[in-house]
Length: 388
Ligand SMILES: Cc1cc2nc3c(=O)[nH]c(=O)nc-3n(C[C@H](O)[C@H](O)[C@H](O)COP(=O)(O)OP(=O)(O)OC[C@H]3O[C@@H](n4cnc5c(N)ncnc54)[C@H](O)[C@@H]3O)c2cc1C
Image 1 (cartoon, protein in one colour):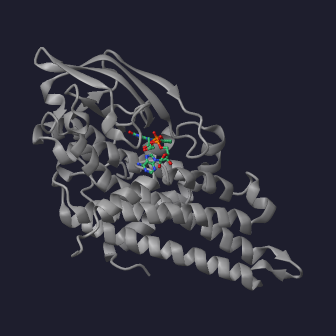
Image 2 (cartoon, helix red, strand yellow; image 1 turned 90 degrees about the horizontal axis):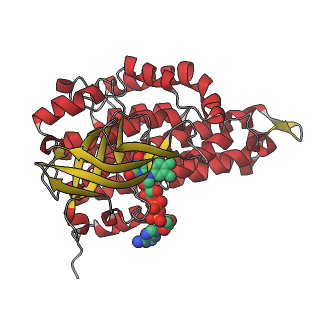
């Protein structure tokens, strides 16, 4: 049905869908209920090469294009938002190294991530620097040929379970975003400790951690790109990783739609299947239309990002299209999952059915990797010029 999929991508999509339905769907409710990090799924994804899917083959990754990575995230998110985050955040944590790492840094830091031996995490957000990421206060103070990082990061997905962290810290006193640099820090480094693990509304089972840096020593070969290039690396990373969040949102929406569609065919009231009521048919039609529009925008955005490659220089088209894809898919996910709960009636509100979990999982896609207000700012700033 969907435009632009190669024969290979269609086959891959079917394989991941089967894996998701057979191995992940039966675990999804328990992961949410127990709020335990799913190490078994890390193993499963490692076995199937899904953790390093979009990473270079030279580092042990799958060498897949952006659309193929998005397809994997979408199919897994259709049954479990938490499980899909394992693939999306692995990609998020790897992207700064892929964008700015030297061949030697890629060999050393990217290879264990691409093989799935290390989980990766991306540590940008701080208590006083969320949407305004350039206001980060974590400092990297130069000395002895390297730096010492001090400060705290919050809301770091997989921060407590990852072994490879990319951390953004100010290398200049008053530089704001211009003075930020990116470092690869191995978890276990002296002075690095994991603080509070958040108790969340959705994507339960994924660990969202506070990280404390107390004079963590980093050497020159742990710096990605040049000193002061960190903010740029973070933004170009988000240009690409937002497509993963769009894919996650799309998968969640599709999962909720499929469940609601099946429910309407099965459930009878007033002597008829609910599916026979025109008001409900129109709801399904609107949901399906928004999902398909989100899918087409995401797949097109993947093509735009793919064509741009891994250049660290910004491209307004890449930035705008990925923000649009994330905005559209996450707003769709929130609306579709809320409607799915409505279509299930009282059953939608109880935990025996998956749609309330999907509604809770959908909400985060409008918040992380830049809230949807921030996406609108990004889209506006990157609109093509018009003649006055
Ligand atoms: C579960 C979870 C996982 C996360 N994972 C990661 C991660 O792995 N790594 C990482 O670095 N961060 C992560 N984050 C952080 C996330 O990206 C931030 O929470 C998000 O960017 C918003 O920042 P904030 O929470 O400080 O909200 P704030 O910036 O305080 O925003 C509050 C509200 O104000 C709005 N707002 C702010 N500025 C403007 C403006 N200029 N115009 C209009 N509206 C505005 C926002 O849209 C929002 O609605 C995660 C967060 C959560 C909850």
